[in-house]
Image (cartoon, rainbow, N blue to C red):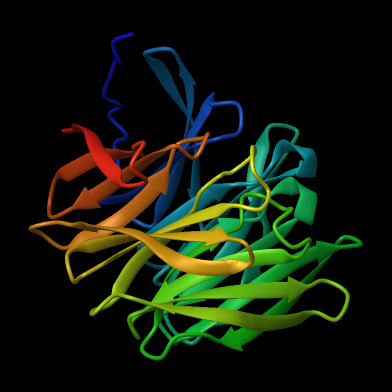
Length: 289
Protein backbone atom coordinates (compact mmCIF):
# COMPACT_ATOMS: atom_id res chain seq x y z
CA UNK A 1 0.00 0.00 0.00
CA UNK A 2 1.42 3.38 -0.96
CA UNK A 3 1.96 5.85 1.86
CA UNK A 4 0.34 9.27 1.82
CA UNK A 5 1.72 12.51 3.19
CA UNK A 6 0.17 15.90 3.80
CA UNK A 7 1.37 19.18 5.26
CA UNK A 8 0.06 21.06 8.28
CA UNK A 9 0.58 24.80 8.51
CA UNK A 10 1.09 25.09 12.26
CA UNK A 11 1.52 28.87 12.18
CA UNK A 12 4.31 28.60 14.72
CA UNK A 13 6.51 31.71 14.70
CA UNK A 14 9.79 29.82 14.99
CA UNK A 15 11.40 26.40 14.52
CA UNK A 16 9.38 23.29 15.44
CA UNK A 17 11.35 20.88 17.64
CA UNK A 18 8.83 18.09 18.21
CA UNK A 19 5.55 16.77 16.82
CA UNK A 20 3.75 13.80 18.39
CA UNK A 21 0.41 12.05 17.82
CA UNK A 22 -1.66 10.91 20.79
CA UNK A 23 -2.63 7.33 21.71
CA UNK A 24 -5.54 7.26 19.22
CA UNK A 25 -3.75 9.13 16.44
CA UNK A 26 -6.40 11.85 16.37
CA UNK A 27 -4.56 14.68 18.16
CA UNK A 28 -1.19 16.17 17.21
CA UNK A 29 0.95 18.21 19.61
CA UNK A 30 3.75 20.44 18.31
CA UNK A 31 6.50 22.21 20.28
CA UNK A 32 8.40 25.26 19.05
CA UNK A 33 11.05 27.84 19.81
CA UNK A 34 8.22 30.39 19.83
CA UNK A 35 7.51 29.08 23.39
CA UNK A 36 4.19 27.61 22.34
CA UNK A 37 2.64 24.16 22.19
CA UNK A 38 -0.17 23.70 19.69
CA UNK A 39 -2.79 20.96 19.61
CA UNK A 40 -4.40 19.91 16.32
CA UNK A 41 -7.31 17.57 15.67
CA UNK A 42 -6.31 15.27 12.78
CA UNK A 43 -8.76 13.34 10.61
CA UNK A 44 -7.24 11.73 7.52
CA UNK A 45 -5.66 14.57 5.56
CA UNK A 46 -7.74 17.17 7.38
CA UNK A 47 -6.60 19.06 10.46
CA UNK A 48 -7.85 21.78 12.78
CA UNK A 49 -5.96 23.71 15.43
CA UNK A 50 -7.94 23.49 18.67
CA UNK A 51 -5.59 24.72 21.41
CA UNK A 52 -2.47 26.81 21.98
CA UNK A 53 -0.66 26.21 25.28
CA UNK A 54 1.54 28.98 26.63
CA UNK A 55 3.54 28.80 29.85
CA UNK A 56 7.15 28.14 28.88
CA UNK A 57 9.57 31.09 28.98
CA UNK A 58 11.85 29.74 26.27
CA UNK A 59 11.99 27.21 23.43
CA UNK A 60 9.94 24.05 24.02
CA UNK A 61 12.11 21.09 23.08
CA UNK A 62 9.90 18.07 23.65
CA UNK A 63 6.27 17.01 24.19
CA UNK A 64 4.84 13.59 25.05
CA UNK A 65 1.26 12.41 25.38
CA UNK A 66 0.06 10.73 28.59
CA UNK A 67 -1.97 7.52 28.27
CA UNK A 68 -5.75 8.27 28.26
CA UNK A 69 -6.20 6.07 31.35
CA UNK A 70 -4.69 8.96 33.33
CA UNK A 71 -7.14 11.64 32.19
CA UNK A 72 -7.44 14.56 33.01
CA UNK A 73 -3.64 14.58 32.66
CA UNK A 74 -3.00 14.74 28.93
CA UNK A 75 0.46 15.99 27.96
CA UNK A 76 3.93 16.74 29.36
CA UNK A 77 6.43 19.23 27.95
CA UNK A 78 9.95 20.43 28.71
CA UNK A 79 12.08 23.32 27.58
CA UNK A 80 15.03 25.65 27.75
CA UNK A 81 13.44 27.48 30.71
CA UNK A 82 14.28 24.47 33.00
CA UNK A 83 10.59 23.58 33.28
CA UNK A 84 8.74 20.29 33.11
CA UNK A 85 5.02 20.98 32.71
CA UNK A 86 2.12 18.53 32.91
CA UNK A 87 -0.93 19.75 31.02
CA UNK A 88 -4.49 18.60 31.62
CA UNK A 89 -7.97 19.07 30.24
CA UNK A 90 -11.17 19.77 32.15
CA UNK A 91 -14.48 20.66 30.53
CA UNK A 92 -12.69 21.21 27.23
CA UNK A 93 -10.22 23.68 28.72
CA UNK A 94 -6.48 22.96 28.73
CA UNK A 95 -4.31 24.23 31.58
CA UNK A 96 -1.08 23.37 33.43
CA UNK A 97 -1.78 20.84 36.21
CA UNK A 98 1.79 20.63 37.47
CA UNK A 99 4.97 22.63 36.94
CA UNK A 100 8.50 21.76 38.06
CA UNK A 101 11.77 23.72 37.95
CA UNK A 102 13.84 21.01 39.59
CA UNK A 103 16.74 21.41 37.16
CA UNK A 104 19.42 24.10 37.01
CA UNK A 105 19.60 24.20 33.22
CA UNK A 106 17.66 23.40 30.05
CA UNK A 107 15.48 20.26 30.19
CA UNK A 108 16.23 18.61 26.88
CA UNK A 109 14.09 15.47 26.82
CA UNK A 110 11.06 13.98 28.53
CA UNK A 111 9.20 10.67 28.28
CA UNK A 112 6.08 9.09 29.79
CA UNK A 113 6.17 5.52 31.11
CA UNK A 114 3.91 2.73 29.84
CA UNK A 115 0.56 2.71 31.61
CA UNK A 116 1.48 -0.50 33.51
CA UNK A 117 4.09 1.48 35.45
CA UNK A 118 1.58 4.08 36.66
CA UNK A 119 1.77 7.77 35.81
CA UNK A 120 5.54 8.24 35.70
CA UNK A 121 7.64 10.78 33.81
CA UNK A 122 11.39 10.93 33.29
CA UNK A 123 13.30 14.01 32.14
CA UNK A 124 16.93 14.80 31.33
CA UNK A 125 18.72 18.13 31.62
CA UNK A 126 21.86 19.94 30.50
CA UNK A 127 22.81 20.17 34.19
CA UNK A 128 23.76 16.48 33.97
CA UNK A 129 20.83 15.25 36.05
CA UNK A 130 17.77 13.15 35.31
CA UNK A 131 14.51 13.51 37.21
CA UNK A 132 11.61 11.12 37.79
CA UNK A 133 8.08 12.34 38.56
CA UNK A 134 5.49 9.95 40.02
CA UNK A 135 1.81 10.83 40.46
CA UNK A 136 0.61 9.05 43.60
CA UNK A 137 -2.57 9.76 45.59
CA UNK A 138 -3.17 12.97 43.62
CA UNK A 139 0.29 14.30 44.46
CA UNK A 140 3.54 14.50 42.49
CA UNK A 141 6.70 12.94 43.94
CA UNK A 142 9.93 14.21 42.38
CA UNK A 143 13.38 12.61 42.52
CA UNK A 144 16.60 13.77 40.91
CA UNK A 145 19.83 11.89 40.15
CA UNK A 146 23.21 12.73 38.63
CA UNK A 147 23.32 10.88 35.31
CA UNK A 148 25.74 12.15 32.63
CA UNK A 149 28.67 14.51 33.02
CA UNK A 150 28.19 17.44 30.67
CA UNK A 151 24.45 16.95 30.24
CA UNK A 152 21.61 14.53 29.51
CA UNK A 153 20.39 14.67 25.91
CA UNK A 154 17.79 11.89 25.67
CA UNK A 155 15.54 9.72 27.85
CA UNK A 156 13.24 6.80 27.04
CA UNK A 157 11.19 4.40 29.16
CA UNK A 158 11.31 0.66 28.59
CA UNK A 159 8.26 -0.02 26.42
CA UNK A 160 7.90 -3.62 27.63
CA UNK A 161 7.20 -3.66 31.36
CA UNK A 162 8.15 -7.32 31.76
CA UNK A 163 11.92 -7.53 31.19
CA UNK A 164 12.71 -7.76 34.90
CA UNK A 165 9.48 -6.54 36.51
CA UNK A 166 11.00 -3.16 37.35
CA UNK A 167 10.34 0.37 36.17
CA UNK A 168 13.22 0.74 33.75
CA UNK A 169 14.40 3.56 31.48
CA UNK A 170 17.44 4.56 29.44
CA UNK A 171 19.34 7.84 29.13
CA UNK A 172 22.14 9.21 26.95
CA UNK A 173 24.45 12.17 27.28
CA UNK A 174 27.53 14.23 26.63
CA UNK A 175 29.82 11.66 28.29
CA UNK A 176 29.41 9.42 25.19
CA UNK A 177 27.48 6.77 27.16
CA UNK A 178 24.05 5.15 27.25
CA UNK A 179 22.83 4.21 30.74
CA UNK A 180 20.10 1.84 31.98
CA UNK A 181 18.23 2.81 35.16
CA UNK A 182 15.62 1.36 37.50
CA UNK A 183 13.12 3.37 39.54
CA UNK A 184 11.74 1.74 42.69
CA UNK A 185 8.33 3.25 43.37
CA UNK A 186 8.25 2.01 46.98
CA UNK A 187 11.64 3.35 48.06
CA UNK A 188 11.67 6.18 45.47
CA UNK A 189 15.25 5.21 44.62
CA UNK A 190 16.84 5.67 41.17
CA UNK A 191 19.55 3.10 40.47
CA UNK A 192 21.90 2.81 37.50
CA UNK A 193 22.20 -0.83 36.45
CA UNK A 194 24.47 -0.55 33.42
CA UNK A 195 26.49 1.87 31.28
CA UNK A 196 26.74 0.98 27.59
CA UNK A 197 29.86 2.33 25.87
CA UNK A 198 30.33 2.30 22.12
CA UNK A 199 30.03 5.89 20.89
CA UNK A 200 33.00 8.22 20.52
CA UNK A 201 31.14 11.53 20.82
CA UNK A 202 28.06 13.06 22.43
CA UNK A 203 25.08 10.70 22.31
CA UNK A 204 22.23 12.87 21.07
CA UNK A 205 19.20 10.58 21.36
CA UNK A 206 18.11 7.18 22.60
CA UNK A 207 14.91 5.20 22.05
CA UNK A 208 13.64 1.95 23.61
CA UNK A 209 11.77 -0.18 21.10
CA UNK A 210 8.34 -1.65 21.84
CA UNK A 211 8.72 -5.44 22.13
CA UNK A 212 5.32 -7.00 22.84
CA UNK A 213 6.18 -10.44 21.49
CA UNK A 214 9.29 -11.39 23.48
CA UNK A 215 9.59 -10.17 27.07
CA UNK A 216 13.14 -11.53 27.41
CA UNK A 217 14.43 -9.55 24.41
CA UNK A 218 14.77 -5.77 24.24
CA UNK A 219 16.15 -3.30 21.70
CA UNK A 220 17.54 0.17 22.24
CA UNK A 221 18.77 2.52 19.50
CA UNK A 222 21.20 5.34 20.25
CA UNK A 223 22.67 7.96 17.93
CA UNK A 224 25.59 10.30 18.28
CA UNK A 225 27.68 13.08 16.82
CA UNK A 226 30.21 10.43 15.79
CA UNK A 227 27.91 9.78 12.77
CA UNK A 228 26.72 6.41 14.08
CA UNK A 229 23.64 4.63 15.31
CA UNK A 230 24.10 1.65 17.63
CA UNK A 231 21.46 -1.04 18.12
CA UNK A 232 21.76 -2.51 21.61
CA UNK A 233 20.05 -5.80 22.43
CA UNK A 234 19.15 -7.47 25.73
CA UNK A 235 19.26 -11.27 25.56
CA UNK A 236 19.78 -13.91 28.21
CA UNK A 237 20.15 -11.31 30.93
CA UNK A 238 22.83 -9.15 29.31
CA UNK A 239 23.15 -6.13 27.01
CA UNK A 240 25.37 -6.20 23.92
CA UNK A 241 25.94 -4.27 20.68
CA UNK A 242 23.90 -5.96 17.94
CA UNK A 243 24.74 -3.64 15.04
CA UNK A 244 26.25 -0.28 14.19
CA UNK A 245 25.06 1.94 11.34
CA UNK A 246 27.47 4.49 9.89
CA UNK A 247 26.36 7.80 8.34
CA UNK A 248 28.13 10.61 6.53
CA UNK A 249 26.56 13.21 8.81
CA UNK A 250 25.86 13.73 12.49
CA UNK A 251 22.84 11.77 13.69
CA UNK A 252 20.36 13.70 15.82
CA UNK A 253 17.34 11.52 16.42
CA UNK A 254 16.10 7.92 16.49
CA UNK A 255 12.54 6.59 16.89
CA UNK A 256 10.74 3.26 16.54
CA UNK A 257 7.53 2.21 14.83
CA UNK A 258 4.65 1.16 17.08
CA UNK A 259 5.59 -2.52 16.66
CA UNK A 260 9.29 -1.89 17.19
CA UNK A 261 10.37 -3.44 13.89
CA UNK A 262 11.16 -0.25 11.94
CA UNK A 263 13.76 2.29 13.07
CA UNK A 264 13.65 5.89 11.81
CA UNK A 265 16.91 7.85 11.83
CA UNK A 266 17.30 11.61 11.30
CA UNK A 267 20.78 12.79 10.25
CA UNK A 268 22.26 16.05 9.03
CA UNK A 269 19.86 18.83 8.14
CA UNK A 270 17.13 16.94 6.32
CA UNK A 271 17.92 13.23 5.92
CA UNK A 272 15.48 10.66 7.32
CA UNK A 273 16.06 6.94 6.74
CA UNK A 274 14.15 3.83 7.76
CA UNK A 275 15.80 0.56 8.79
CA UNK A 276 14.59 -2.98 9.38
CA UNK A 277 16.34 -6.05 10.73
CA UNK A 278 17.20 -8.66 8.11
CA UNK A 279 17.49 -12.43 8.35
CA UNK A 280 21.22 -11.97 8.93
CA UNK A 281 20.56 -10.09 12.17
CA UNK A 282 21.82 -6.82 10.66
CA UNK A 283 19.77 -3.68 10.12
CA UNK A 284 19.23 -2.66 6.49
CA UNK A 285 17.89 0.55 4.96
CA UNK A 286 14.39 0.12 3.54
CA UNK A 287 13.47 3.73 2.72
CA UNK A 288 14.79 7.28 2.77
CA UNK A 289 13.41 10.76 2.09
